[in-house]
Length: 125
Image 1 (tube, helix red, strand yellow):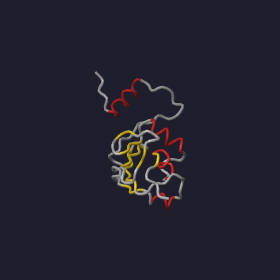
Image 2 (cartoon, one colour; image 1 turned 90 degrees about the vertical axis):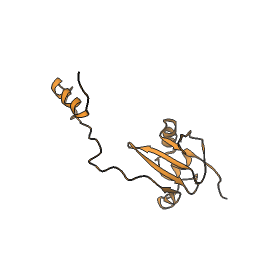
Image 3 (tube, one colour; image 1 turned 180 degrees about the vertical axis):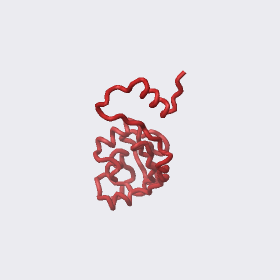
Image 4 (cartoon, helix red, strand yellow; image 1 turned 60 degrees about the horizontal axis):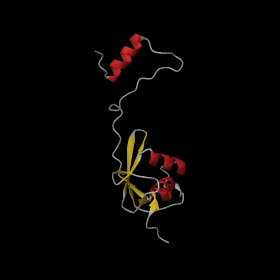
């Protein structure tokens, strides 16, 4: 029996975009999943040929649905269920570095705060 549609949360969990179905549902509620450019609700119907954008780790994965599944499948079968059109990630040099303080170092001093603001590009007036 061939499926004509599937729920967005069920399909994204089935093709291993999320570890659990509840994580897929939560991502839909938070607006991290888009179908054809619009924010998707968890129960939205997904059809073959739809474009799915999933935001994770600060980057979007762009997938074109090529097969519908509602049960979790193996990694090899899951890879056949979509066409990954995600653009390559930017080079490491272009990704902004976030300054991190050592755990337990306490609050930054005024001097350290100014240095952090300078790194982030904030202008103090």
